[in-house]
Length: 171
Length: 170
Image (tube, rainbow over all chains, first blue to last red; front, top):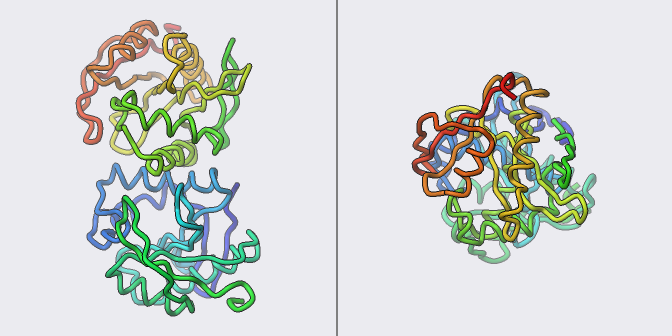
């Protein structure tokens, strides 16, 4: 499936491609990626990017490259995510370096949640937030999520499951 | 780019998709995958499959799922491969468990090589083979490859570079 392009007030959500490698490699080179399996070498970051794109092939949905509409800069990697053996489909968000604190994660995650509800027909969705990831926890709270239970993953360690408001409330 | 579907005498080379997960996970769960970064858990194997699919988007080419035309069974993952950090594009091949010794890797790799020369316009191709992977080295020789240096992969260790005959030689 070819990813659609979604628009919010400040952001364009679009298909990932090779122009997103550089910002993703910078993110994965940084300690900021420690909550999502990093830091990783550029070689590994490229494989992660390829895996994000292939997720669309395997599931029919996946995460979007989130760009600032004004400049085209990539600010995040956000959207529905459900790799093998995930507890259930989630909305995931990673903010690229230097784009924290501006509300981009909340703005984009909300748009992808709306899309998952309306286009994919999801009736519920979670987000997994690593223990100690305060920035991400705040995003979950701003999105109206409620803390459900902890979950431990072989790659990412212990995370908390946050449950989003359902389609009827969230819209 | 959407992968084309190619046909050989016994095999169909097609786009990697979700139906290939079970055999790929089995391959990566076994010691046979030790030359290509395994063994891996099912979670990691799923990500490896997603990566194979995403490679097509990033490069415009990638490895094919190789199926027995008669039954649809996945016998291998074979084709052009060029992840970040590799010295140059290669033709790679992994045979799934239980399909060794039947000439499937050679049959698929020869077709993939034809495709990269004729359709992608490659002027040269190589294959990276772990020094201890005797079966894979033999396959390289049978395809007319010659050893052409080494590459030390941060993930896979010391690999021999086997240079394929160029398009004009075939």
